[in-house]
Length: 75
Image (cartoon, rainbow, N blue to C red; front, side, top):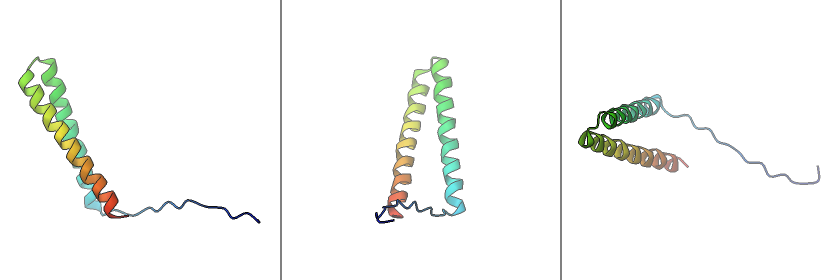
């Protein structure tokens, strides 16, 4: 064992239970708006489709931003 070997260490941090609950609520919220957007698109309701698509995209972007901000905060 003459060679020095570099090992990558993976740190696993426990998150509080309410963080996981909030993530599940966020995912359910996104699924709801995807379903509404698809339904509105199939029924040829362009205004409802556009509104639900905007709500979905804004929720997705804000949620991902907050998720990554929380990951970077704990480093």
